[in-house]
Length: 145
Image (cartoon, rainbow, N blue to C red; front, side):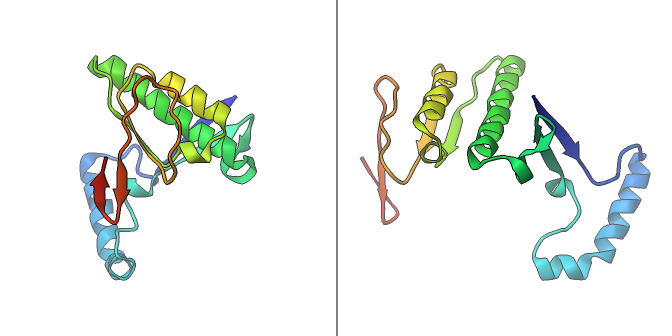
């Protein structure tokens, strides 16, 4: 059983004006730290998802395969939701994810994406179980075919 818990800065239930005041005061208060770290330390980019498998945190107790599989499951669900809402299949980019999966998981993932346009990046050439794949090679910043 996979559970997803969205954790956000404690700003729920605030009016627009209250939210503006809280954020403005926080940004002013944290300005030196933000400049030092090179990014703002409060905002939606700091929100997080906790993923639990059978009640246990994937981050703390899951294998690397379980962690990757749970993230891929979320991305596939996002893809389906976008397809249903927009009535258009989104283009899928898989950045060096296939090399981190065993052959069974790789085949399952690609089977789920078989009706979509998919771009895959990887460090080593991988035989893709798709009809007429196109391969391109990047070398020294140049695209070769």
